[in-house]
Image (cartoon, rainbow, N blue to C red; front, top):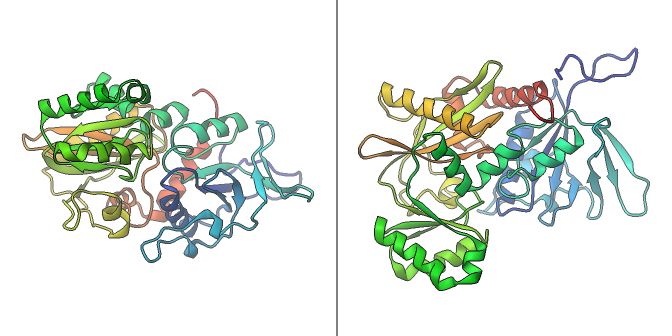
Length: 385
């Protein structure tokens, strides 16, 4: 579907594509999703698109929200909540489940459901489980509604750090040492699971990074410098995901690169470097979003290193069968080798996030970036492709 052939009534002028910006969600990244949504709503071209803001509360209710992006900001170090912008405490938005009907309905208890019109594309700015992990993408596939970003499989693989690394390895991309503790391992024998991590530390040394396997924005991650801190780090990670990933620390520079889908295929941005934050042990949630630790764009790399990391970023995009956009994160080790840490299929997209900054330095500003993502989604069909 293109913007020139949208469905319309006979005799009526062509209508603008309708974009539903969906944000919030049930994950621990709810607040950051809100900040991202505020930036997207501010940047999207209202002369070109009609916009419908839809929030998902922490308990999973889909609601109509005020179209007031200025209220979707971190204030006094506290991220916003969907409930603060919901038009009703009880009403809900219902997506169609018939691919032949894209009309969204709003319903409140005791009232006649109200049609909100058709949606031509969904721009999901959800981070983490129940939004970035293929679940929302599967719902939209069933509904027959195009959407920004990767499909079901790529979204699921991109969210699960274990299987992401397995896919990278199978495509010849270098990853760092890691070990996974699955929920059943922990439930069956905690001592054996803990020993698995301790043996890993014995092989690769301290510090270790203990992470939820399926979370983002550095939430739930602990840098563990010695054995005494391991149990607490495991407990923190398990608050966000019963499956945990433990990684060996890699000594080197943190390099990021954005990938964007163009008409002729994916291209990589100029890379950025994340310098060690002065007030934090590593580049954690507060360093990213609260204290806004600045990255270096473009990264001070040689021409050969820049070309290499851009190539590897596109290779990672293709390995996971991604669509739309990806941020690929690497370590440039002390021996000059790029090791891929992870990709984000719906990366941080706030005005201070690295993905928009890298494309800004590559000649594509924020409004154009939003437009390109919507156009890429409109070009694609749902279903197998």
